Length: 72
Image (tube, rainbow, N blue to C red; front, top):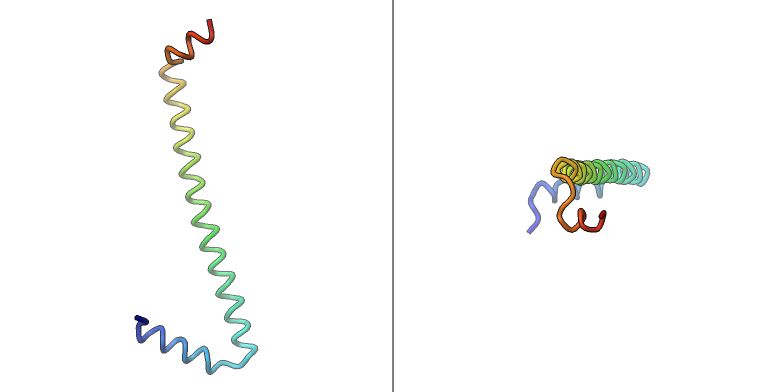
């Protein structure tokens, strides 16, 4: 169910002139894309951080038995 606030905004949008509707939609699209890009960047950074931590742990502990056998 839609909140009354949403309905108020929806009715206000309907009363805008065509040019103002277009400008609003362009600005809203840009803001939405920016939020999505920021979120994706944060997730990528977190994933890279976890990957680097895992690599550092493996380097600190040395090769596992299977890796050591393959190297000999």
